[in-house]
Structure formats: C-alpha cells, structure tokens
Amino acid sequence: MPELSVIVPCFNEEAALPLFIDEVEKVNLQMDVDIVYYFVNDGSTDQTLEVLKQLSKENSRVCYLSFSRNFGKEAALLAGLEATKGEFVTVMDADLQDPPELLPKMLNLLREENYDVIGMKRASRNGEPVIRSYFSRLFYRIINSVSDTKMIDGVRDFRLMTRQVVDAILELKEVNRFSKGLFSWVGFRTTYLSYENRERIAGETSWNFWTLLKYSMEGIVNFSEAPLTMAAFVGILSCFLSFAMMLYYFFRDLIWNNPVPGWVSTTCIILFIGGMQLLCLGIIGKYIGRIFLETKKRPIYLIKEKNFD
Image (cartoon, rainbow, N blue to C red):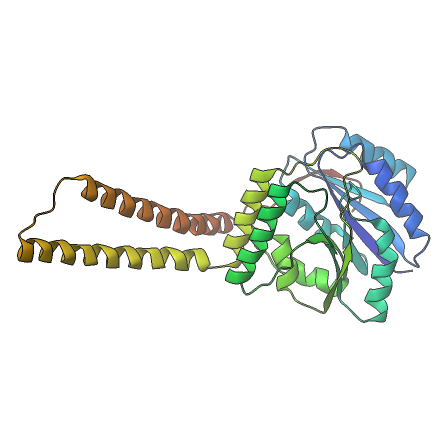
C-alpha cells in the first residue's frame, strides 16, 4: 500500500504524544495506506524526546529526529518535509487540534476529485481569545491586500499533499520561511474543508500574542514589497509637505511681514520628519536583514539525533 507520511513538529509535547498516536492509529484502520510518523523534536525542554524514543520501540512506524536546539516551527516543518518518503504527506499538530478522523475524508477527496492539496480551515475561532482573533483577521486582510499570494483566513498547517506538491515546496530554498505563504505560492489544485475549532488535549501552547505578531510581520515582509513602497511614499510625502511649508512661511513673511514666531512649530516639524526617516530606515533595514541572513547560507536546522536513515 502507498505510504502516508505524517509530519508532527513537537515542542514540549510529552503529554500529548501518546494520545496523538492512539487517535491516529484508530483512523489508520479506515484507510488503505501505511501511516509512517515523522516526529520532529524542536529542542524541547521536557521529556518529549524520551517519550518519542519509547514510542518508537513500541511502534516501528514511528520515526523521530531531534534538533540540537530550538529552531522554530518553520524549521521543524522543513525537516519533516525533507525526511518524508510517502506518496501522500500530511502536517499535523500533536495536541489534536487537527482532527485525525478527517484524514480518511481528505484522502478520498484527494484521490476521487484529483486534487493535489486538501487544506483544512477552522469554521470559527470559538475558544480563542478575542484580541488574538481580531488581530489574526486583521493580518489576513492586510496580507491579502498587499501580496499577490493569497492566504485564506483560518487555514491551518494541517493539510494533505501529494508527493509532487511536497517536492515543489522543497525546491524553495529560502532561509526565512513562512509556510502558510509557501503552501499557497506553489499553487496546484487545492480545496479546503471546514471544521470546528478544538482546544488542546494536553500541554500548553508556546504561541502568545507577541510571537504571533512577530510571525505575522515575517509573513508580510516575506511575501510583499508593500512596506518598501510605503516607505518611499512617506519620503515623498514628507518632502512635499516640507516644501509646501517653506513656501507658506516665505510668502507669509514677504507679504504680511509676519515672521515665524517661536520654536515650537520648528521643533515639531523636525521631530515629525525625523520619526518618518527612522520608520523608513527601519522598514528598509528589515529587508536588508533578510538579505543578510539569506547570503550567510547557514543551515536552517541542525539534527542531533534520529532513528532512521
């Protein structure tokens, strides 16, 4: 039977891993594929690696690799994609927020309707903090307005892909990776299924408001030049306003013999223009920093140990 490779990035998921295996194994009986697990231990500080070693002894289809430190979920996703060999590949979280029972439906749809990718999106954000939901929706509105690569609100990394799609994603060698954008950028025939949002079955999430905000900024920088365009526009606007104010005060003094009083207005203008300059330099510096990281050619991750070739 064909292999279904299941990629599971792990960071401090010791409590969830046995539960995850049990749920997926129940689903495996409903599909005519051989499921092989690829767990990526992303520098966990708990007993995640020890649990994976024990699970691999109990189940020969459990493969794991462990990083030398925490490199982030994007690195873990890439490592999993590079390790897989299956005809079909899926990405799932170990906390069971991605329902394993949907895998048979996804696989049937992929085969019968000749799709290349079956993506999953949450029908609602019930159970998620209100502020996080608001800013998540705001991010998707912004990214879709400034980028040619469209991303659908609520879509998770949970998806089922053919080998051709995985190979296409692996051809993208960039260091600064934003998988949600990369999955959309490669194209292929894709459809999305909706499901109700679920809470974690165990453990605590490592994502908070600030890490999500940073991740969103990475997505905008990686898939849009709009911030650079905005910086140029701000520069042009500042020059125009400064020139207009020079003309205004010149004719004010020339015609009405009314010199500019005080220094408050001058100070405010200088601070305003200086702030705009720093903003533009920050935006440009963000892109230069990305170029700097790409040119250094550092490996995206380092593997300390694994149990497969």
